[in-house]
Amino acid sequence: MNSRPYLRALEILFRLIIAGIFLYNGLAKITELQDFAQSIYNYDVFPVFLTGIAAVFMPVFEIVLGLFILLGICYRTTSILLLMVTSAFIVLLSQALIRGLDISCGCSGAGAGNLWHTLIQDIFIVGMLLFLLQRKKPFLVLDSLFSRKRSE
Amino acid sequence: MKQFIVQSICIIAGCLLIGLAHNHLGERIPLFAFEPRYVVVRQVQDPDAPAQPDILIDRETLQAALEREDILILDARDHSDYVDGHIAGAVSLPISDYDTHIERISAVYPPDIEVVVYCSSATCELADALAQRLFAEKIFSNIKIYRQGMADWSNAQCPIETGEANE
Image 1 (cartoon, helix red, strand yellow):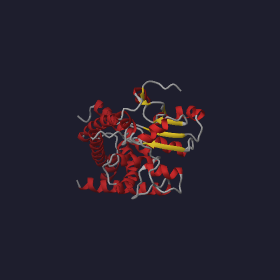
Image 2 (cartoon, chains in turn yellow, red):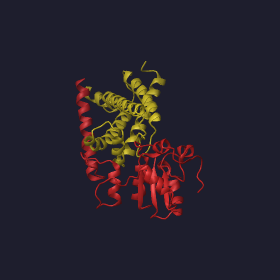
Image 3 (tube, helix red, strand yellow):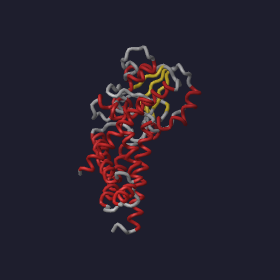
Image 4 (cartoon, helix red, strand yellow):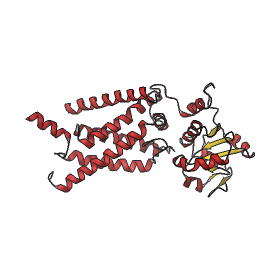
C-alpha cells in the first residue's frame, strides 16, 4: 500500500498543505502578539492570567509543528501533536459558535479568520492528519535518515 | 509511547523557551497580567489617565451625539454587513480592508473630530482593533467605542440605514 505512487503524492501534498497553514498562521500571529492575546481573551474560555503565556507559546508551537511535519522531524509525534492541537481548535471554535460569540477567530493574525471557515478547514486538517498517521512508512522524512545512520 | 512523551515534552519546552525569548526581545506582552484591549486603547490615548473604560460610549449618549453633525461613526464590520444594515450616518471602515479606505476617510474628516467605532455586538473585537489602529497611527485623537454595537442598536429600534452611504 505504501508503495503506491499516488498515495505518496497525496502524503506529500497533505504535508505541504498542513505545513503551509500552520506556518502561515504562526508567522501571522508572532508579529502581533498583543492582538493574538486579545483574540484568546475573546474566546472567554481561558483564565486571564494564562492568556499572555498562551499568546507567547502558541505561534512558536505552530511554526515548529509546521516545519517538523514538512521536513519529517519527529514525524509521528508531530502528527499526533498536530492532531491534538487541531482537535482542540475545533472544540474551541465550536463552543464559540454554539455560544454565539461574535468574534473573529484570530487564527491568522488580528481580526482575521471567520469561525465557520476555520472550523471547516480544521476538520479537513484532522482528516489529512489521520491519513498521514495510518501510513506505516512515511515518505521523504528526515527521521528515516537518522534511523538509517543509527542502524549502520 | 515513551518516545512520544519524551519528544512532546522536548518540543513543547523548546517552543516555550523560544516564545519567551521572542517576547523578551520583541513586543513584550505581559505574561501573567494580560489586560483586555479597551484598557490598552485607553493607555495609548492618554498614558497618564487612570485605567478606566471611559473610552466606551453607550447607546443613549451616542443617540444624543448623533443629533450633532461633528461626529464620525465608523463601522468596523465587513462591508457586506454594513450594506445589510448600519447605524444611520455611519461610514464603513472594515478593519480587514483598512488600507483601502483610510486615506479617503482621513482626507475628508479632521483629526480632532469625535469618532465612534462599533461592530456587531459586545463580544465583537473588530471595533477595538480598529480603534487601536486609528490611535496608533494618529489618524484621529478622540475615539470612543460603542461596545454593544449593531445588535444593541437594532434591538432598541434606533435608526438604521441599508446599502451604501451617501458620503
